[in-house]
Length: 97
Image (cartoon, rainbow, N blue to C red):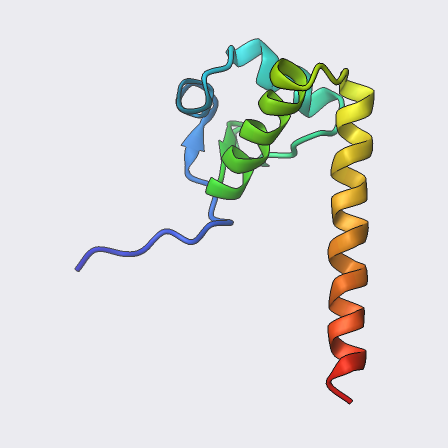
C-alpha cells in the first residue's frame, strides 16, 4: 500500500527542493536565515521541506523575480497573507452564528 504524503509533511532535502522550485541551494539557505521559510530539521540537522514549503518558495521566487520585491517586501507580503487568512477565519466563524 502506498502512503499519501500530506502537504505539511517534510520530505524533500534542500537539494531536491531547490531543483524543484528552480532556485539555488544557497538561496534557500538565505530565505531560511531571513525567516521567510522554515524547513523542518532531522536529528542530524538535515533540512526537510514540505509541499507547502515548496509552494511558499515558488511564491517568494515570483515576488522577487517577477514583481521586483526585495526580501523585506516579501516578508511583509507573507505576514499580511497570514493576517488576512486569520481575519477571514474569524469572519467565517462569526457568520456561522
